[in-house]
Picture 1 (cartoon, rainbow, N blue to C red):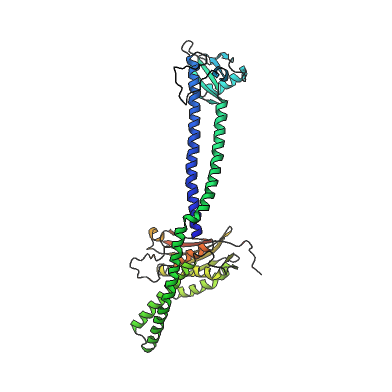
Picture 2: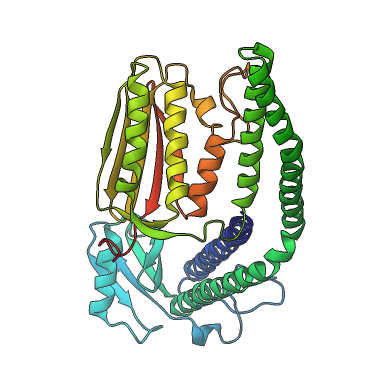
Length: 415
């Protein structure tokens, strides 16, 4: 449990930090893209306003951070070309004196790409263009500004921010993992104290409880059929089982609660248990169908998995509608063994089903039904200790408990 808590602590911290980094990287690069586009548009507007001349720095005009930087070198650094077309779309002239990387054929190719787009501004390759409609001839002047430096800068910022964020995220995850033990240490201490209390209290209760049950057995011999004696014996036995279950639950939180694992055929192991429940249910007028596939090997504690199967079958017997069948299926799904117990329970609700694995939870509000409410919690603890998963689902009035466990790498029976 503590290992899972530690992993969740690291995972939640890393995911939260990853979301923050993603928002920062996306926001920064989107803002840079917007400012570059706005800066290029401001230069294009200036070129139109000055009728082809480049703006020069002025001490009277303060430049905003997102405007195109205008310095004494701007006329030598800024590269653009223009193409004029008439109202019919025929090329009137091309202006290439401010650029050397473009010839007339290339200029016309760029014109063809933007003329049919219907846009007045936008990017085409590494150029930002502006479609300016002249008032004299009724034609259109397309001005293309070279933005290759801006684009390279933006690509570099994107690369550095992305790689830097991944590096920072990896370092953060390592730091979280290193500090996670200390972060969950109060929880670990609380869990350890709880386990120690349950174990100590269980052992302390066992002694007087054993004496009470023994005394009740003696009284049963002297007073056979006495309802008070039978009640004491039944209550004592129930309390003894509950105490043992609580001690087992606390033991399942250990690092390796099942050191006696071995490789075995799960279907063969559960056949005898299913046969016993089938005979028991037949005496109650209820049918249990068992479809257990053979050749499904798992590396686990056979006693523990039999206990889980017994809990699920016993739960189905207790809470299924009278006269309805119980279906038990063991199958293979890829590299996992899937054990499913299904029964009909018309009184089951989704709210109740979502809480069935809680300790001491019982759907019967009056708590008059048999059982102590820790069986399914114990089944879940055993399965998770084996690295598996157990879940409950409701389809109509059919309740299904599904256990999924990884199969052993070698499917042949051990020699």
